[in-house]
Structure formats: C-alpha cells, structure tokens
Image (cartoon, rainbow over all chains, first blue to last red; front, side, top):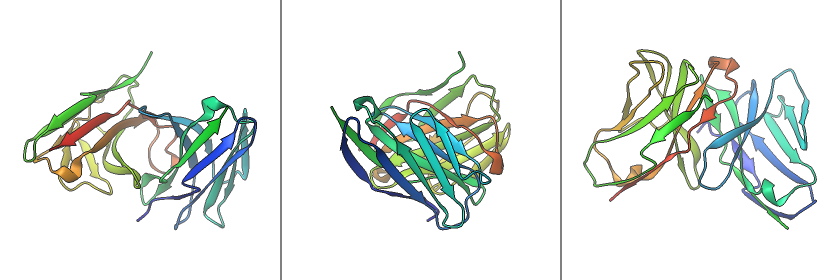
Amino acid sequence: SQQGEEDPQALSIQEGENATMNCSYKTSINNLQWYRQNSGRGLVHLILIRSNEREKHSGRLRVTLDTSKKSSSLLITASRAADTASYFCAAFQGGKLIFGQGTELSVKP
Amino acid sequence: DAEITQSPRHKITETGRQVTLACHQTWNHNNMFWYRQDLGHGLRLIHYSYGVQDTNKGEVSDGYSVSRSNTEDLPLTLESAASSQTSVYFCASSALAGVNTGELFFGEGSRLTVL
C-alpha cells in the first residue's frame, strides 16, 4: 500500500501541553500536507511543506520534513481543548495524493 | 463564498442497488477527487478527475465509477452496492494538480450504509 503511516494512532494530553504527530511513507516525498478533521466533518487543510523546506510554522503549528527519511512531523504547541480532532498527513505518491491513516488527538481541559 | 457540497449526507440502501453520490463545487477547480474513509484505513482514493471528460482510477476503484461532464460536478456511482462499500465518502477539489497539488477543499461527507 502507498498509504502513509502515522504515529501515534491516538494521543491524549492535557490542555497546555504540546502534541507531536509523525508521518512516514515508503517512497520519496515531494510536497507534504497536513489536514485536520473534526468529528463528523470534512477535512480542513492546515499547512503544506515543500520538498525544499525543512521546517515551517503557522501559528501554534510547526511542521518538519525529512525527505531522506521520507517522514514529517506536526507539532501543536500549547494545545487547547478545541484542538481535539483527527490529523492526517498527505503526500503526492505515484501520481496521486495519498493520505496517512491519521492520529486521533484528544486534549483534555 | 465558494464551496463544495455533497448529497445526500446520509443514505441507507440494499445490496445490489445502484447508488449515486453527488458532488458539486463552485470553486471552478479542474481537479476533483473521491475518497472513502473507514476505521483503520484512513482515507483511500477511489477516482479522480483533472478536467471535463477526464477520469482516473484510484487505489480502490473496483465497483465504483465517475463521470465528468462539466467543471462543477463529479458524481460517484456504485453500480451494484455491496456491504463492503458501507463507508463515509468524501469529495474534494483542488486548483492545482500533479506533483504540485496544493490544498484540497473537502465536502462534509456522505455516510452510506449498505444492508
């Protein structure tokens, strides 16, 4: 399967803590994206990191990309209860945008 | 505001029936995609289109078909519904395609149950 592997599958933290999610693929990565999905809703784009970038920030989000390891990480700093959602990475693979299996984040107040 | 809408949002059907899920976008995007989401599998690509009259198979296309007669719509048809096709289906569109595929805009999903 070309699907990305995400780790951990589920993560539970307290408000104010940082949350880190990882994503890896079996084949080379060009641009990589991260999406968020609230329960029962569609996915919403968070951030895109290009293959020539190693790190990118957007508000409380920090994304890294290691093309040699075919992996990326998403860090959410100072988490809030409203960050509770599933997070997916997506990379262009074999002519198609392929999503990871997702990390379910629960932030407890 | 531009948007992407799916209908119906919920549908229950019987095995063997033909089902069509509608997807309509007002972004004027050339690129449209259908994914299914199942527990333990994340999102898997079913079919996609890079423009009018263009359709392509994704990872899990067996039992599904699409047609693209205009820019706005990409209906997904299940020719003969099977219980294995019980899932949540998401339509998405994007302005860019190929290796430069940028942000995908997703609909709210269609939950299909095949009994």
